[in-house]
Image (tube, rainbow over all chains, first blue to last red):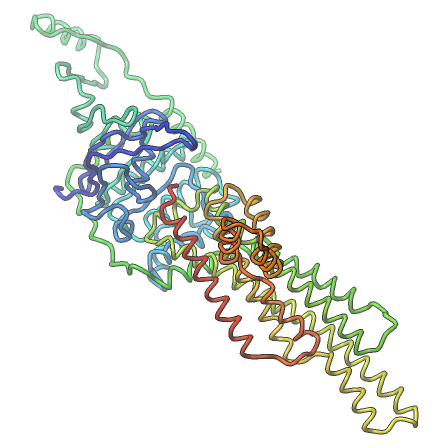
Length: 289
Length: 310
């Protein structure tokens, strides 16, 4: 886990506004590292410098100061880009191509040919559950399908690093869940994932480490556990606990003297989970019918 | 956070080495450009061209068959030339700005693709479509010219044979005059000239589209440059030989002379269409000049595009 997938050092990006001497500092002396094999989330509000940082890492922009490296290679190096699979926010691909043709195009750009490419396309279409829409033009794809074909495109050359910019932006909860499951699968398959998002719940679900960026500067960084755990509190969830048992627990806590119960009640599901459960049940029912 | 990370997964191995420059990647982008242009239904303009040729071929002009054939060729090849350069401008002007607006460029350039490969691929795709279009237009012209030529030769032969005043030599001479204006392999050189000119136009347009803010701007400026390029010799002679021109004007004219291609040079094809003998030295010089223009404008495009931030 010690190898660095991304190494950003003292990165500064300044945009000069046209015809004036004003400058906008989009990223200000930013440093962070993404270790190989981890899921790293860069979070921050809109305009905080996330996408600019990502573009510098991708070699689409040059740093005004500092450096960005991918697996030890300068981010502008073409060999570094072969190690990266990138899914932009709201991915736009050629609408005149079908899903399979899109993957074929990007695969060929990465130097994959023949049966190897054909097999890889079939494998990825299966992974993102788009086998049935492989020959349909992207112009007819839904937002979620576009996002999934985009994800397949990022993996076409089997890169070591996957960069995702707001991967679930504009996708409905079911599509969003599928994408999150795919990200988790990527981590389990040994990919390094670098994710930018302002959807905190999404980041919390999938990331190992998180960096919080605001106005171009890194404000907090660390493992998710470090950042969100409340050290002096312990949570316990019981199932089937009788009122008598609860009384005993309360009595034990009261006896202790130091500890106190801060919150007690029924844990709630999220609206999103509820929606997914209902949608899943409806789908099952209609499949059975 | 996921709880699936109970054991550390095996990390992915490094990807295969990529060449620093790859003809395969250029070819892939060119192929995609061809598909894009074809699926944008750009070949529909061939229908308009066919209509023009059929209309011209069916004009009844009170003149000799040779002159009528000459006129058909002149209008058809003129239209072919017009369609070729217009197509070169419009299709090229749409490609890069559209990729930029649609952000398709992000995903392409985030793959191991050099910017020069992208530019050459785009230009290559446009040139391929122009070449196919010109061949298709030439085929339409050839059918029309051959049909009219056969008609004229048959009618002339019949009329002259019916008239006892004409000897066999005179008949052969008259038919030869018609055939001189008919379908001849030399017409292929005129098609080549149109292709060379359209190639330069496409290269200039691709250069403009690397810094233009919209397709419309690119199209307008490209058309303007095309028109200026036709008045190249006249304009430069006028300005450079004006005794009262100051040094600034002279320098400006020289820069314009270098930067704006001289499209007049490609008009040697007009003589070929009219049946004049082909000077193959001129043809090869034009080929080399076109190659030079393509290299210069691709390098200029790269100069702008290489540091462009997206």
